[in-house]
Each structure stands twice: as structure tokens, then as C-alpha cells.
Length: 213
Image (cartoon, rainbow, N blue to C red; front, side, top):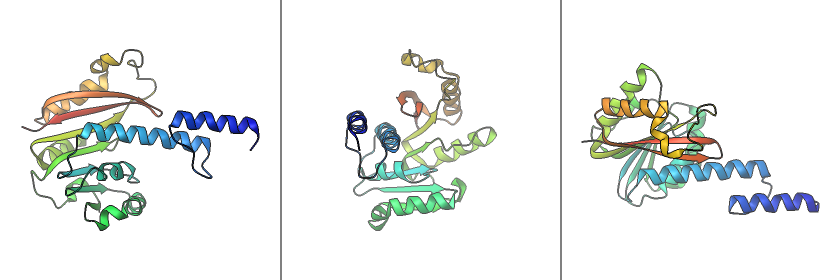
């Protein structure tokens, strides 16, 4: 590595807040940093307690699930994913939590889950909820799984051309997607609804948060 490359690497490491791992490219490091920061922010919105029962919809490769599971001590985190390949990746990533019976992964759909109504303290999803008519059906299923006072957190990404709040994040409620999310939550019977906004390396994200009665 020449002096120029070494200098670039030092700048990237300073921006990430930690050193690049051996063999890790600068591009990979930046993307990994963005994922960690976004996942950390999402977990903050969940307000998890060590004893809670939690459900993630569409856990993908299991990185966010891993972050959330790290908060639990005697609780339980279930996850459902419809992709077999992603399920396998998440299983490998979270093997230690599965061995401690803190995590239970399911391959399938939300409707296939074996849990009774009012079982979970918190249900969350990141960019995994369906759109159109199916969205309302899934929302009603999620609220039915939540205990009284349970917390629903759905995180969505904003397309680059729909980010008017980059200069004015306080106006997040004026974003059309935000308005639609709030209306859906009201229709699903949730209350104390509010939105949180975050700029990330991957663009803007909105977390819609609501509680069951």
C-alpha cells in the first residue's frame, strides 16, 4: 500500500469510527458502517427491555436481528423470513443466540407463525412490509400479536427523489409516505403514533411507531 492509499484508508477509518478489518475494502467498510449505524438507530426506536418477547418481520440476513438479540437476557426474539437463502444466512449469523434459546427463526409467512394473540411486547420490520391491499391485512395481524401497550415499529426508506426533509427534517410529517403510514396506523387501531427520521449512508429512513390500546 503506497502513502496515498494509506492516507485514504486513514480517512475512511476516521469516518467509520473504527479500523478496517484485514482484507476489508474501503467501500465495504463504508457500507458496513452505514448498516451498523442504521441498525443501531432502529434498535433505539424499539426501546427493548431484556425480558421482552419481540418479533421481527422479514429479518433478511439477520444483522438487525443480531443487534436486537444482543439487548435481551431472559426475553425471546422470534423472526420470520420467506427467503430460504436469507434464512440460512441469518441462522448462521445468530447461531449463538439460537443455542441460548433467545432467538427462534421461522421460514415462511407472517400468517404461518405459531404464536397466540397478544404474545409480543414489540413487533418491528425494516423495509419488509407489503404494499397495497395486503399491507392493511398484515398490519392488523401484527397488532393482534401485540400485548396491550405493545409497540409496533415499521421502518421504511425514502427514495432519493422524495427527500424534501434533507434540509428540513422537522417537517417529516409533511412527507407523503409519512402521512400514509400514520393513516394506516390509525386504521389498525394504534395510538400515540409518531414518526422518527434519520439520514443514513443509504439515504433517508422513517420509523413509524405506534402503541396498542
